[in-house]
Image 1 (cartoon, one colour):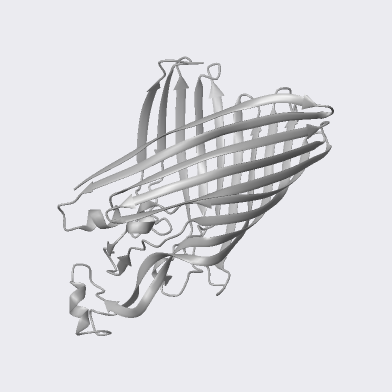
Image 2 (cartoon, rainbow, N blue to C red):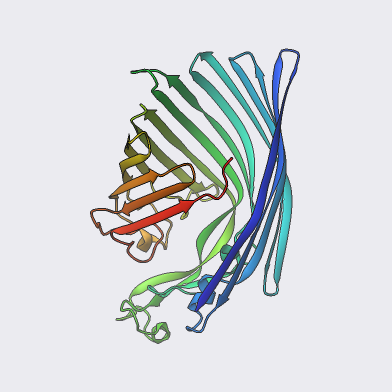
Length: 375
């Protein structure tokens, strides 16, 4: 069984700066293109091709944005973006396009503090897997169905928050950067995995064929009730939440904090969305040595339990867990850099949300990067 996943594309943009009377403009225009091509060769019973289906998806877009400043205290951003996509897989073909708008207003009553509000639209095409996935989940053995009729998501987001930017707070040369954002997002045609069809029973013992449960529903070993699942469009979903991120850098080191909370529900039924991740807090402490060439640090990730799940998906509930990572990097010069990372340093056993199996224990990675050209 082999998978070949090729991604190619480009991203180009340019910014022109000029003034019209008291207004300073930064007009950015550009475009991008990405092609995802998946080819699966499966001689292992069809599981590989089922969960990583072959197909091709092309995404392209173009945009223009004008950031206007009037004195140091007022900032206005207006933007338009055009998106188009095409998806092919076997006999299936789909595509679509849309123009999306964005407007942001930022006000700085005092130096270092900005209050902002944003209305933005977004467009997300369905992925190859969301559209074409088809097969039997390993355990418990429920069926996953394809949905060639999936439509792209269209998001309407209202966001407000505060940006903080201060230098020389405690000592000369240090810097504080922080952002607090509160958002409310209404998504048309939201793509979520949902249970479909009647409930049926599958074996509670791995390796036993699910076909035996046709004659023994509800009797041992066929005692696990399940539904088939597929990715579907919800008419509209509501997602709201809070994001916090901050950094304090004193030159010889840094500390960061990031936290996210998201609540997502089907507007029609008020049922929670399966794809909404659990709450997360992450903090990093790092130190620099040898003229900033050597960086050492540690990262703590805290992930909350996820138990508020849709009907029929209670088996996907996960417990809270915390992980500690260690990292080190050394810059030999501006071209050569060595990195070493230890993930889950205490070899904790845990399962990430929506994964069927336990996640890896301690993982060590080393990398050497070489740049053959620098700007």
